Image 1 (tube, rainbow, N blue to C red):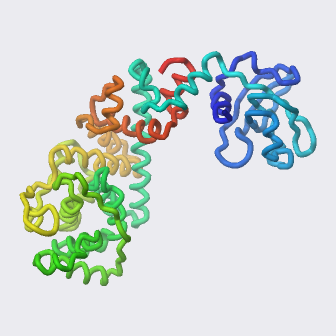
Image 2 (spheres, rainbow, N blue to C red):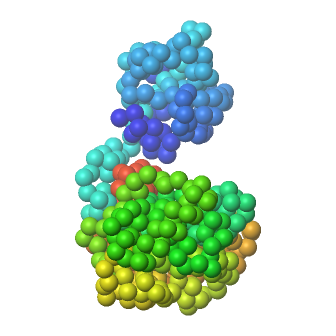
Image 3 (cartoon, helix red, strand yellow):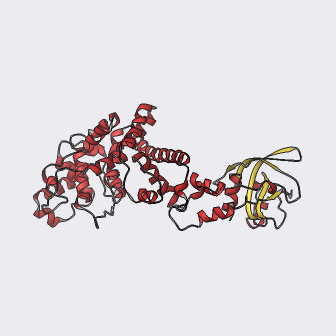
Length: 426
């Protein structure tokens, strides 16, 4: 209830006739203030006009006036700056710590607004606006998707730039961490990210001319070389284990505990061991993709950077052990596009944003516009509601909407949700 009142107040969704104090004084709201997410009054720096005078200060919101006393605000001097108490029900007067009375208004929502608010926030559907989503104005939807795409890339760019900064400006290390996470795809992204953090690229670069050293260190730190019997029966696995034991001691590396690898109901080509062999192949020779990626100019170049061929043992094995029908090609065409979306695009955006190069930033957007829309659960959820998804630019925006708004039931933070609540349309 209080969250609903805060939402109504923040967005001015009240009946004009409600702006009269409980004492009968007409009051004009010049500025509802800025929402406060920390301790203290709910809104800072609000402005109101009453009896020809303008008052500036903080606003507090409660379901009932008596909540002021229930929360102990009458003893808290940080609430002495409150110039207006906004409530759903006025059941008493309220006073500051010095005894002075605070004006109050009872906030009444515009007709139908409370029902529409409850309709979204209490809905069990995903998205909550499923029934009306197809009627969203194309202009408003396009504007919101553009904003969502920026949010998604900005969040990824901050993480990438932070890795580069913590590595002394080494963008290769940032690409390595981003690539490792992406190779886990959705299922093993976290284990891959933790593995990359435990095996710094600087260590791998020192032995980049030795495939067995790179593979041994990565597979051993991942926990895939613990089977001593397999190491004894498979000569190549045995050599990798020896490399791991030697290099982990040399660099003083410690395993990151149980990484929680998942392989159930997974195609062999998606096994984490197969993806790890690909990561080792990227590192082999000095991790050249780290310096090449920021220079990518189009989709063909981006795809070619990720289109690698596994050699030797990994051209015949999906994981350590018996031979299989593994393909030397590391990734399918669909997987290549996924890597472009999750590695090339955010790295270009992060690099261009960090150095103020708009051309590089625009290349990130052009890659997304050049790629087909992704086919995954979040995207299918929206297309089933009648939302068109024409390219990866739009599918990435819809994934952001699904993951950080719809799934978290943050309808009141969503522009579509706001239009539904405030205007009665989606």
